[in-house]
Length: 294
Image 1 (cartoon, rainbow, N blue to C red):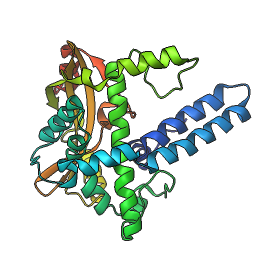
Image 2 (image 1 turned 90 degrees about the vertical axis):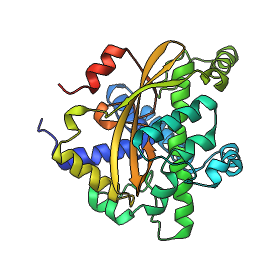
Image 3 (image 1 turned 45 degrees about the vertical axis):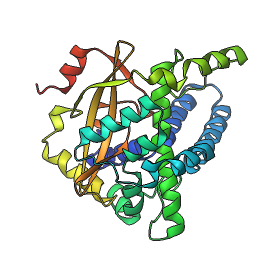
């Protein structure tokens, strides 16, 4: 099989980062259809899953909207100075540990990226119009308001999966958990009590993949992707976090607007962290090996 072109990788990377729910359902759906003996049945399920994913990413839950509206951090974006990517990551993790949605959103670039998104530039960049899961043209206030909610929902969806992966004994990989009953549900609810996150701390934060940190092609791609959101710079970080004596890796992509940084996505493509935002168990030695120049 011929190796995919650089432009093909660019499209795939863009879809993986921008539309995590759609990417996960789509790729898993293709895999399911390929290995099932009854592709029509499986395909119908995949189509339903995609429709559900569209609805989930398009609407921010009312309770989240209420918290964001009531939170001073969310109501007054930019009140917290985040002059480095590390500052943004530390505040994000601190918000997770505190169970504070407003604090988490204040560490993101949701406000700036939704306002500065350039629909035409993205289409030109990836040579495709991804209308189902993508942001809408922001020159219309109607769509700009939608984009803000969609961007917040996508990042908070990754936050939710991060919390699930840290606290639950269930396998958190995007698959539907079956069979399940009330007893299993009650056990899950008890496990994912956000109060258990109070001890979550950041041990270290480094560039996600030192091999590409100063690579000219990578820097060019990052600059072009940042421009699609009206940002001045895009970078990645791989955080080493600790909870209850266990170490985990969590990836981040960040955007810089002027002197301030904000999280764009809880995934680091260059480190191949899970698109769902789940934490990856690791050791200090593994983290050091992955993030140290060879």
